[in-house]
Length: 74
View 1 (spheres, rainbow, N blue to C red):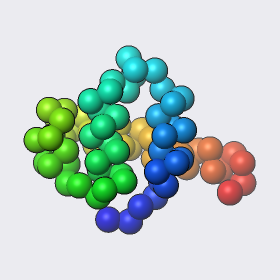
View 2: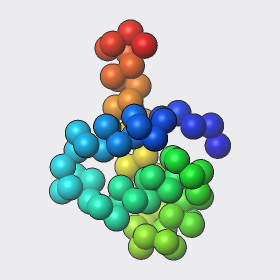
View 3: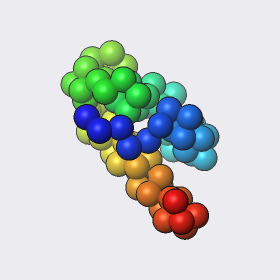
């Protein structure tokens, strides 16, 4: 898996969203997926968050990351 978002960037991105929008278990599953490269199935087993929810959260954060890079010309 190609790492698109660095761990430090991920933490900043997650800080933008409230715990209501991105609950703590979902954040942990996203960290497992993006930082450690865990499969969606493994994230689901370890956190109890459905793989669909994890995939949506990862997509949301990757899209936000790309928008920020585009706006700042990175």
